[in-house]
Amino acid sequence: MSLTVETVQTALKGFIDPNTQIDFVSANSVKNLRVDGGEISLDIVLGYPAKSQFDSIRTSVIEILRNLPGVKNINVNVSSHIVAHSVQRGVKLLPGVKNIIAVASGKGGVGKSTTAVNLALALSAEGAQVGILDADIYGPSQPMMLGITGRPESIEENTMEPMEGHGLQASSIGFLIDADAPMVWRGPMVTSALEQLLRQTRWRDLDYLIVDMPPGTGDIQLTLAQKVPVTGAIIVTTPQDIALLDARKGLKMFEKVGVPIVGIIENMSTYVCPSCGHEEHIFGTGGGQKMCKEYGVDFLGDLPLNLSIREHADAGRPTVVADPDGVISDIYKTIARKVAIKVAALSKDMSSKFPNIVIQNT
Image 1 (cartoon, rainbow, N blue to C red):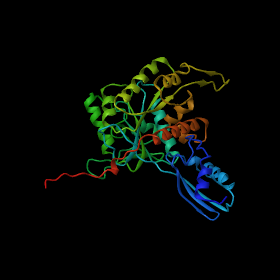
Image 2: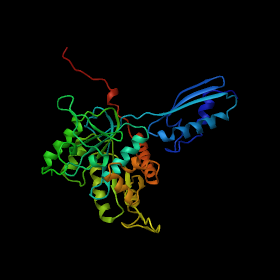
Image 3: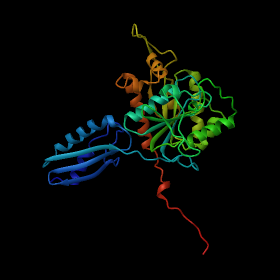
Image 4: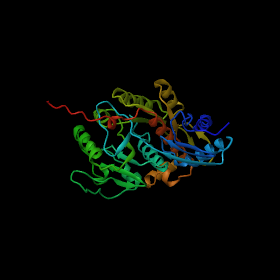
């Protein structure tokens, strides 16, 4: 049997992407496949960021192709290419931003902001260009969590440059006010301020913008869900019944405005005593998974109630940065990869493909 493009494709169909559980040929990830005598060259282009996986994928592909008869040399290049995906009907994409992912909870105190910043850092660690918008006008926390101080620069009129921390582009009302200044504003003023932060920040070529949503499901949150071009939403909850009650409301809010639910993260799932190793489900058990089954959405993962997560965030170095090779960082990175894969499977935005139609009187 001679070595051809077809035989190489057939061999590749037997290799399942460990992250998506789909073979690379069916996923249309095999690009620029060439066979010249015994020389094989190809690109594997992933639709999600996975820099930490590149070497293992390359090695696995080479191992599979090496068994084909007549093979002399194999050149495999693995990379990621993130594209924009469709948003709510009638809402335009944001310049400089391909995908906006809202992280919401419906209830305060469940660790939503800590989860949001660690997911953003995990996506960045996997090679994506990532930004984070602190949408909590009343209680901005991202400046402290990212260890960012100072005021943003304004190069062009009515715009401001994003601040930067640990490789993330960031925007927050916390950069514009004193740390102890209360925001005594009514809903319309808060919504207006948030839209300005979103649209007047000069985001630079972001693959993902993580929006740390304020808690609750009131007028402000609904307005944001309707006006901000959201690719998908993540719901953060604890296993506690009261938290799940409000998380359901947050999920329903996004469903009503046509925003896909990427999945649910259960935070503070379990506590392990550092002294004796005893594990305790302080807030209950299985609540997040039960909610996923109830609404037919994906369970993205669970995170422990751990002192280090709080300490790292308070110190301005979230866990993914402070302990990048630790067990908890690995959980955040696994969840972030699941999020990116789910987003990659959504419908692509095709608005740039359509020509502008101009009707003239003739």
